[in-house]
Length: 121
Image (cartoon, rainbow, N blue to C red; front, top):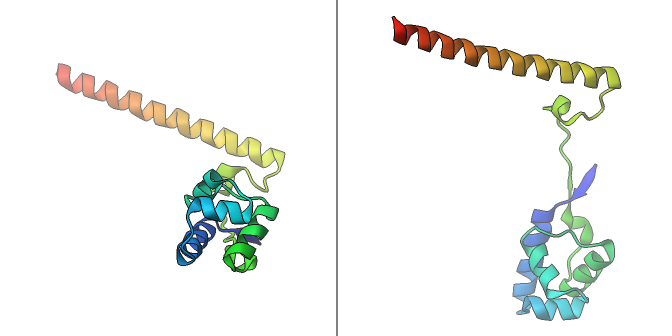
């Protein structure tokens, strides 16, 4: 699945704007987008609407499709994100995390107890 790369968009907008010798305000006027939004796009802090993206692409002469990248599908940490899990699997993950946290607390308590005991001896 492809998704919009804010990094690619930011780099392209800034590069093309500078190549044309435009300020953010001038580009905003030409594309019908507020100057503040242009700055936010260039800082990867704003995702433009499809209409805004079309106006930017037309004004700066770039292909919208070039701004999309293939989303890497990973199965790492899928349990943490609770994606594609059934309700019983989610309950199992929750139980596992609870057990892990409890074990961590027990290890910390045991460590504190052992340290206190070794200082008294």
